[in-house]
Length: 293
Image (cartoon, rainbow, N blue to C red; front, side, top):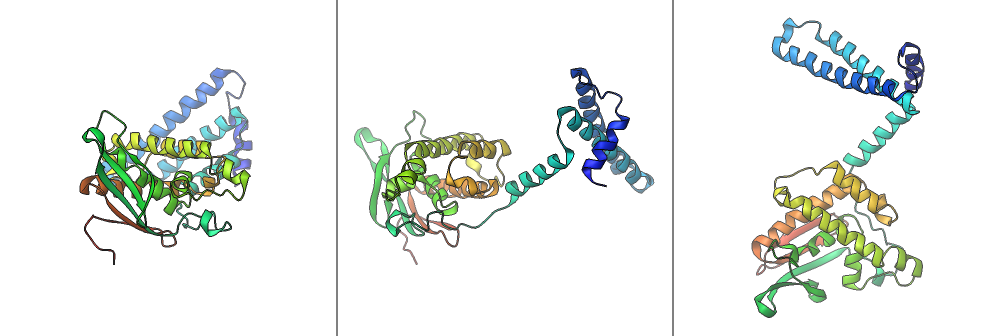
């Protein structure tokens, strides 16, 4: 049976099919109750085992009641159950699929592309007043200005450029890295302004700060293999106008987690090197004083 046919036929048994807000409330409460009944039925199976011989029949009944309330709520809201199901499949595909790391700027001149291979170094130095600063180098050349934690709390944020580098390697996108390496796409003024300009840079810095705040509440993501969907939804919302919108939530999750793995290494070893290969999708940390193979 098609979802659309099920939804149509379920309306004939809806005793609260009116437009009054209380009619919808009744169905919402019914959905909550039936979801609880599904869990309760399975609890009985865990308790009684094979003695609960009708448990699958009971589960089918409770799941069916749950589906009826979902269909009824859709009808009250003017939604098609078919469309709800299709949208859910698309959402879950985006959440759990991880794509390639192909370049998003392959059609531009080499001098305007993000680098695909190389070595970054984040080097700590002592600045005025004894503050620790971090300088970024790409293949031995200085890039950008030194960074501090910019906070009364010493939380290692001075190493946060690693997040931008992870986005550049694993997402093929980072307006901040383009600015640091002077690789903005100036040959196309529209792209230069809309994709590589100040607004895009602010968005990326905002994402880095947002994710860092989230990470401080989750042990800097140590031992974490998944991040909250709401965080990924927020990132998708603010990057909607940008070329990185083609990357999935799963791609973002990979870049965030890998960036924090290296961030923890940088903080632990007080700086170091990051060897990367965007085609292979790899970033590898090396402590200072080690040689690159």
